[in-house]
Image (tube, rainbow, N blue to C red; front, side, top):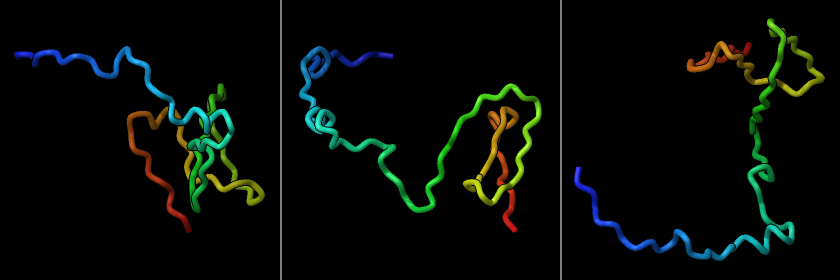
Length: 83
């Protein structure tokens, strides 16, 4: 396959101004963890050495939407139906 002629580099190797630098230094920059939306779910990866996973619902705890194990790697899990 023929390659296109190389154009001179306009960005690589050249200084680039950090437009977000002052915001980060002053603490005003927003990061993805700063946002919260109604109904937003969080993923918490947990590495466990146990062989059997047991989950008991406790209404005092934060509701759990879905629990995945290594058995689901490469497959799409079905969500349990809510009563």
